[in-house]
Image 1 (cartoon, one colour):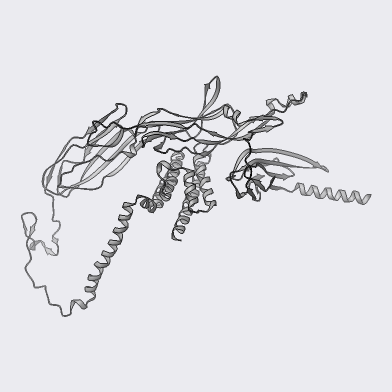
Image 2 (tube, rainbow, N blue to C red; image 1 turned 30 degrees about the vertical axis):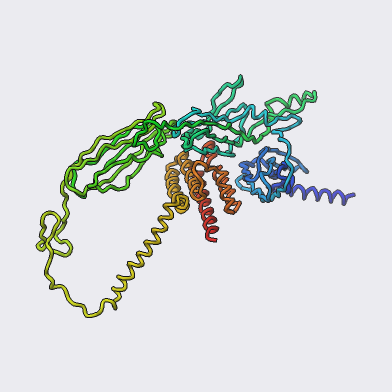
Length: 614
């Protein structure tokens, strides 16, 4: 009997020692699940003292839908006077598809030390679809998705339903809720603007809620997103829904058994709540697009729609030959500033003109307004009076429902003779040997004392063959370059493909400048535009059709590694999410996002290039 007591005491001491050691482990209810099954994953920290535990960081559940979590529970126990405890964070998940997926490590801090769990591999096999799941259930109390949808939804509204082609429509997305939101929301699917040119309108990074009453119910309302759309196609166009993953807090009640203690613990003071992830989906918008009038169309009309003014400015009207003149034209007003085309200018034949330098300033705080500047550099070559005729610009004004033509004044240019000879030595002749006759004829030198007869045949010299072969090589190179340039010019998709990485690099450079200036909104807008612009060009996707799903589909067609696609999706979601909940350490967050997206583009570029070569 004494030996048995000694054995039990020893076992208890060993158990106490084990419990007192800190450990952080991950476990799942099943490592093999059906594609429609739900399963639980738990992360448990055990230690003698768990009061210093905090800063739990969950892994990314990229291949799973989070149905519930994190649900937190704590337990304490005392064995032979030694106290120990554990804290568990659990999630209920459902797979998004079949395959073998890895749930990466979770981490937690305890008294300044960080602990991590081991990754877990989940095998998802073919399953049987189930009926619509209940959103939350606890102690016999059930809340359906319909009940959540009646109390939380996203509403998309347009400021007009019928517009002319090219006229601005402003679409606003608002979140209406009567429920508590547990933590940060995540973008599940962005709207598709097929048939539109889209411009994001600036909104606050932090959602501020106001109140509205709908059908007798009071909702808290927060602005999520605003976008300016300019239709580029006729007929009825659709704007697809915005889908957000919203973690909702559901207040649960225990099933009443008539026991006074049950009623006591149902009191809201005890906060008997459960977190449920709900997919909130906005409505689909329909827009009717009318054609522009076909009568009284000005000759100078090139498709611009809006309300504009035009101003011009010339650097000088008195100049000399070969001295450049700057002519600036400003188009400003309300409309799609980026798509404004250059007015047609008929310069006199006596002027050489160069491609204009274009710049734009756009205000995206509501109705899109701004200014676009075209700066022409012209060089007069002939002496005399020259005239630049009035410059015409025509646009369709939707508010007036008519075409408007704007004109600049004509400019009379007086050109005097410029200086052609500079210095005391021209082409090896001294000033005394040069005799100018009129303006452009010089004295021809007739002295041949410096000429001599060569002793060797020219054909045997290296210089002869160099002079003969070099032009042929240059001609061959020019032909190759010309064919390549013609191929690129005739194939816009190939041109965009070749220049995709270069354009993305330039936009990332701009994003880095915005990051250094700590301009979060502009940084995330620019870096998102750089990434989507790269995907448009590299994957041959039209701007009006670009979406995360479309890009993923094209990458999968090219057999890009699934891990790289998952990383891309995760980066895009983080970037879009930054608008809704900017992090406190803004510079560090932007720097991490910059480095992560840079690596994503580099990896995708390597994969696409290597497969093309293969």
